[in-house]
Amino acid sequence: MARPIIEPVTEQNLPEFAEFLYANLSKDRSPAEWQQALRVGWDPERPNFGFLMRDEGRIAGGIGAIYAQRRVNGREERFCNITSWCVLDAYRKQSMRLAMAIVEQPGYHFTDFSPTEVVGGVLRFLKFKPIDERQTVILNLPRLLASGRVITEAAKIEATLQGDARQAYRDNAGFPWLTHLIVGSGTSWCHVIYKRWTFKGLPAARIIHVGDPEVFSRHVGRLTTHFLFNGIVSTHVDTRHLRCDVSPSRIRSGFNAKLYLSPSLQEPDIDYLYSETVAMNL
Image (tube, rainbow, N blue to C red; front, top):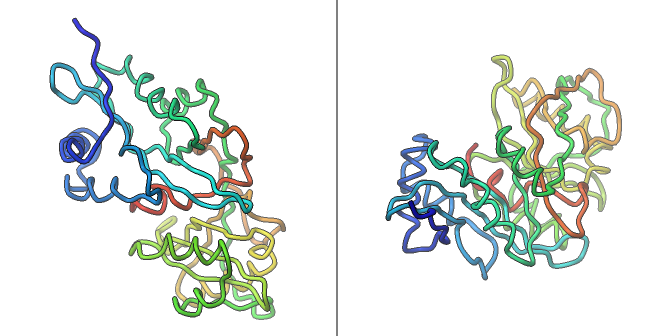
């Protein structure tokens, strides 16, 4: 039997790939919504939407990709975020070929922010590095003496942020499942993106993005007070973003680590903007 072929996901076969993901990965999104999710991208030279595996004309597996061109540390960088990796059981031994098709593309930094344990093992074999998976859970209490301000109005956020931070806000705003704000004072502000969810049956804020960990940590008390006054009981943030102890809080761990592969960037340079974390309601 001939080995299945690997081909890029293009505008022509994206509808077929979306039907495959709907049937075999998740029915939470319609095929049209799968197409919409995979079309999100921030690279005008996006080469594809990922890769698929085809056997005798039928899709047997695929891996999605979201591309972005953005500035990191003052330099233009290109990213490929891996998403929606799905292979039929009979073809699992061919999964590595899909991963190789992605990472053999030159000139990109690669990320996967929602790997399963199996996917994580494959990517670690390909030299992907883990990101600290610990999360700090902060109980939101009224800290009325905490320093700083919280700004939630879109026009004021855009007027206050400067340079790359303003561009990042513009590029990643508009997804209805996420909320943007800035916290800080004077000329020092941190762009924060969060998603409302529930933790142990109570309203919680899951922090998706921390634009400036130093500013965030200085004013975290003001932010958690803001959340409390808006009916949110706890704040969940990657521990790697905190530069201070916040009480009362506790550390949660044991999650599948997010992963990245880069010839030049280090863990502090990696965030979840321009990726499925923002573009898909996960």
